[in-house]
Amino acid sequence: MKALPSKYSWLYNEPAPRQLKEALFHYGILEHVGKGSDPNIMAWAKEVGVSGWYTDDDIPWCGLFVGVVMQRVGYAFKAAQLLSARQWINWGKARPKGQEKLWDILVFQRDGGGHVGFYVGENAHAFLVYGGNQSNAVGFAWIDKSRLLGARYPAYKIGEPANVRKILLSETGELSKNEA
Image (cartoon, rainbow, N blue to C red; front, side, top):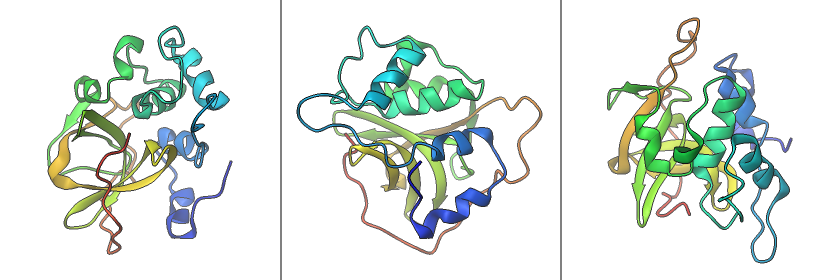
């Protein structure tokens, strides 16, 4: 596991939800640009049952990353749908707009499709999102709130963890325009 940047190291101290811990383990995995594909990404495709039609990490993989994380912690999504980022709007339970919380799954519109990732925090204008295929890697990106289609969360098996909450951040960063 590659260490998180120091400004995000506070995430290591969050006790839950389980998907947070699983996702952080993959920080920094980078798709191969050009010939070949990252073996981790291709293994995820096999693990979730899409390796027959997910054949290269040049194919958008944000939904694949969210899918493998959620499957590993016991919240699977239909393999035929998980690669389409916008399909995640139909998964789990809806969180009302304006009430997004730590590690909710956020679904965004983008040029040419959609994007999906996990809520880390927000400022007045943007969400800090942790996900796959963000600058071709598993990492962090600031995404304008106006692009949000919706937020989803799992039907927690023993109740929503106490630390699942809104995270207000004073920092800002360059807004991502197109995550593919």
